[in-house]
Image 1: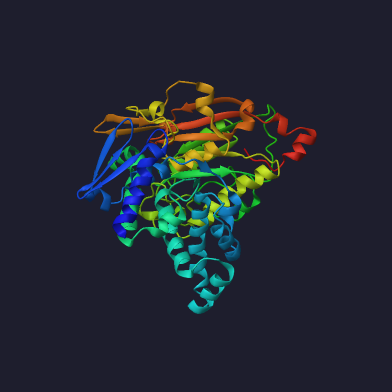
Image 2 (image 1 turned 135 degrees about the vertical axis):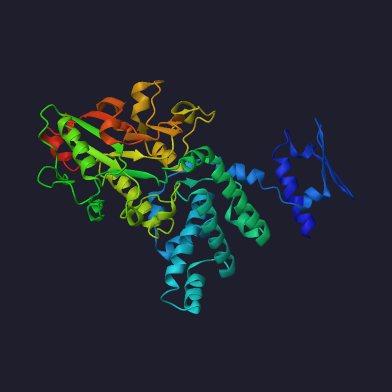
Length: 455
């Protein structure tokens, strides 16, 4: 029976690649395998190959699948609704797998408060599926999405919940290993670059300045030595009115050693003298970052490996963007050190053949309507923000620090550039900077409508 099932699966996979009508395909079974004949060609498949499942079509299907954004599903925690969504075979495969994965998390939470029998009663009551089947798929979906990034959703066609369930334990483990290898392969060059630097052990550093007031509840990284009388943080609900030109300057800088008093004085003096309106600093080896890291699974260091609020942070960040969209408040700006480039064929040296974004996080920004404003305004101009230096020789360069804005505000951006502030920042990163015209959002009715909008 197992042989026939594997043979059937092989035929399905091969049929999908044959031109013309399936009726024109002739299959001849032999002791050592079988022959598949079409009017154009003949393919011989050995018995050894029949017994071994070929995961390549499923890997290609999974990693090349279209991405989708469903903020509502991602934020869903209700057990009944998740069960209903996963039961519905008419829902997209990727979203059903996400629902199963969220189910696994929800079930684990419930198990802390109720017995296994009570849990089984709830699952049986609210689902049409067998509980064993349901738990198997939910556990496997959870592990799978952890390997391939659970957000954004990948709308695969072949990797279905049913297919995932029918894998043997050995086959599933093999598939997970291949997925893990494929995930690492996508960002292999970046990881090599980061890990090869003796002074660079850094997790991804990003921020999103959006209209969601929930961000006020998050702790900020405080070095405690900045003179509070001279420099103070700006409230999220305030509009800066000191700049009469209506042009704001925003910068992001990876600043190594911000805890040094001299570094702070030099850097902040520069910010004040240049009349910078919004400054976002990323830095390494910060204690608070271990607890408040957003998207810590992206090329994280040892300090952030055990972050347990990752899903909460994903939910918070994307729900903030969704709320801003829904309330017509704008989508804000995402900026920082992404440890990945938007287009390695032009944003890296030596350049790469790959032209797509190097991380799923950047891809998700693109699909959400954000644009790399430096590339939009500067076309093919090549500048880098990070230089890897070894033995006083530059080994590689990359533009991994960038500022992203929603495409709605593209016409408001006056300038986007990269500044070398090595003497001021004493950093191996350069500074990404933009100038944005905010007059349309600070005048009359428009001012009131967009008062809570932060750029």
